Image (tube, rainbow, N blue to C red; front, side, top):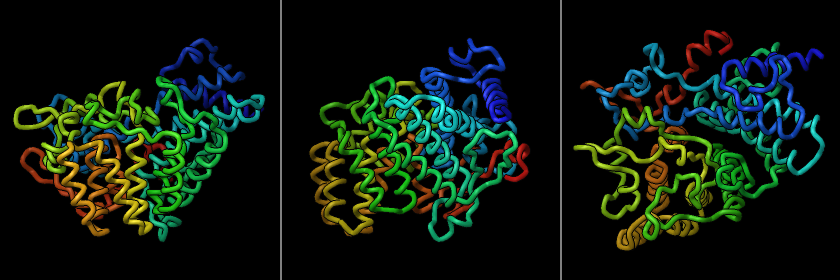
Length: 439
């Protein structure tokens, strides 16, 4: 009875701080205990729905954007843009620490309660599998925002984030190590892969995890952990289900759209409208493209005087967490790390053939085939830079690779994030630290 009362209190508390879906709206306060598969699905749908838009905020910290100093909401982003984490203005948008734990709360309801309460069925397995996958995604984002980049030599001692696997009001939320969090992420995704039984989700429901989505996610996790063979194997498992890539020569459309044949998981918006109105493409980002040969350039950017607006994101039809392009570029990167340079070249060339004009590809084919391993590594990473512009991958990619120096200019003053700067790890938001002294 004590445990059930905790479920009621926490579930009502979660509802109190979020808007409710239809199921929760019609359930009397104090009796919010789901019983049926449909009701548990409504709980998990709420977990998906409240997944935060923190990837946009990471874009502000990267080399992708230049801020509009005269934008109406520039005060929300200025201190993020200048990496002023220690003493930001009170109006600065905080990174979504608590919101990610709200997602985890919903997944824990499914994992801890639905697993034992519902009768066995393929639908139950799918539901619980998705909950494990969504919890893993939330922890993956938490650890890559607020923990150090994964390093096998130091992960066991590097400070991570708190681990909450049960609904317990008495739990003490003490940060665990980076290694502990990654171990949990891997455990959750392994369970998800065992339980999820839909290879793909239908369009419109593809904000939910599927087999191809969990394999893609595992490929990304192992890439960050530098477990090259496991990352490659997971990418190949995903590609066995969906290996579609849009040929921009024939179909010049954004591949980020939820109904794109490249779409695998359409959950997140990497470039929200408020940010879109207050920023432009940076000189660094624009310089990474061959404007005449790269077919992505006119799709991604539109001239606005002497600057360029970014056309990706800020639209519900561009929700995008995973797509097939990532699988090919991960496969190329991991093949190279495994000293299979020929496979890496074949894979990256097979992908970019869909992104450049015929003449541009011919030149690149000659260039790539002449590259040594170091040059090919840089080329693959730059292709990720170009392909995933403002999709929320750049900050995490910089953290796991070079942690390069970045200089931002605001109101005539230069601000520098030096190479390997400690600010590549974001500090916990002030409110979170106030509420939990253990942080």
